[in-house]
Image: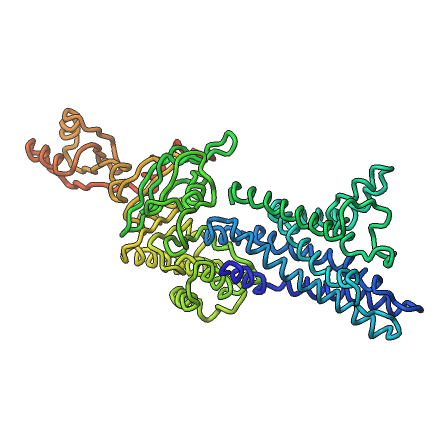
Length: 249
Length: 303
């Protein structure tokens, strides 16, 4: 618990998490607002989450990676390892705090998006009733939290901001989608890619054609996809922790 | 107490620290002296568990650093004053450090007061001058009121006032019975600060001794002799096996003999002496003499 408090003090005593959070909210909720304002027909619940699930997530991943890479950039990671020579507990605490913040941010953006769509387009039916609808909206926080753990792992491994951010953005926004272009094998591979599975978890199925993941032959259930996504994140964190422990700081 | 036993660090084929063994005792400032690139910082990082030794080990009060419970309460270190987030305030920097080792926030205020940074505690550390950064680093080292303190080149780049402040501060810490290890590449600085010296070159231990012994042994005993009868005294000294060279202003420079011995010889032979003065070799000369072969990066000085 002490180390969680330490990481909280560290994170909130600099400005970047505030800026990143504000940017994520503005982008996520803002995109929904623009979509809602531009639509002449009713806005569906699926449309409200494009901003959260496909745009704001990138900012959250960057924020999570920066939380680690700035420590390497300014060598405060060494002060951290002097204070906590076991290293693992300090890094796990950091991943936990960053994941919690990302999760809360995800809920704010997801529900904020639904809210703003309702305000701009009052005639739309945006009630959240079914389990699929709840998963679609409330699930965004879970995806953010797990994605943040992944980003922290990448940050620990790469140790520099530009590299970590490039890897995460290309991976999450471009690479997984491009693999689908490979004839035949592409969609089979995609069924096992982490962010694609995260998207699969969020989809409401046939009700939300706007969401990605269409045409991919997933072998896992939707919750299975989330567990798979989480499993990969934890595996990456474990590798990062082992590397960090062995490496000279 | 810090004990290094056969400490070795290799980076590929480069040996940064080579089978280094030494002991740092409490109650006095121990200088860790060596030319740039001698392996001082690498050794300090290994003492603190940041770098993993290729071989050997180093213990602090009998334990490796990584096994210390709440290490800041045992060891305080200032390796680099710039290891702070530039946009984090000095107080926040110390607060998270304190929290990590279960130290109360009152310690933060206490160490800020001790180094004289209370006025600027709320300011971002990135705006600090080098002197202020050093003070913040020292404040961080003192947080847990540790028995063992390590400082890596603490006076580098400081103005004379800052140097004096740090020197006095370290001596006071040692006088309180703490173990203080300070690295430097400046012997003149260490001669003023340290009571004991660990001298390394190219990662190897050259000597560990008191500062006085180090200077004596390195400079050798030379005595300057002036006399109107040097033509008589010179051969007598050579006969006794001392090395005699011509010194400045027609004097003789005798090494290997004490002034007492030379005075006795002169008296016994009725030689009039005008001057008989032991020469204290300069510290820089002593240092250069010992580490001359061990400097990693040589630059030929025009002769």
